[in-house]
Length: 322
Ligand SMILES: [Zn+2]
Image 1 (spheres, rainbow, N blue to C red):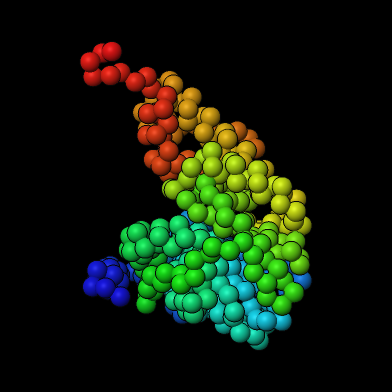
Image 2: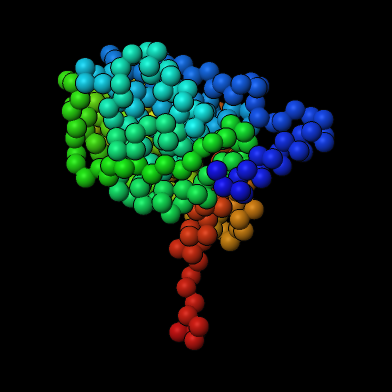
């Protein structure tokens, strides 16, 4: 841990002592995420995250992770937001399967999906090459941000870069053949994984269900193209990055529908010359009203997407007036 992070944790402790208030670091003094394995298919378990933003109460456990038990050992998909999460996930895997871990995949470089990495053998952690380069570039910044948001839940967490770039399109463990599908749009590199044995499609954050999609590194047209591709992949059930397991493709349709509405609405706001604050005041269609965090995510998405949309919509005036 560097000095900056140590001082963040120390400052939080000092502030709490002076104000005689408990640290805003969750209900449990023992920092127990209370992870539960839900069986979603044969030998396949999901650990479903809360549909919330990262806070000192939830410790960042707002993401789905998963594991598959095979005769060769256990495959882990994403490792969660912190060292503590990684430890607790590993314990859950041991208790559920009793087997060694043979492979870990990071679906993309967002910190809620890969900051539990340090608990696993780095040589076994596989990710797309652009996920690896993205983490090298932005990982420390993500880490500082998470220390600020999550406080002591992050204690001891160190950025751990995956050691195995995915330059192959499938792997087999026991009788589980996994197809590794390299896509993009939510970020520069989004890995989807299809287990041919069970028909489970692990979609990472290309799919959200009943939780508003996040867009800090999004390319919306790429994202839509990836969703169209996922729809064609023969699968029985989808595990989205956020939201419960989905046997009906609702996560693909809802994510696509929302992103389409968001983009069209923001283009219209730009055409009307609205500034960023005005642009965020969108009338939310009834079908999206129940998506968790929709108002906050629209505000964040305006900050991420609106400058480029404005640039594309506004007429270009050359300096010489020509
Ligand atoms: Zn993400």
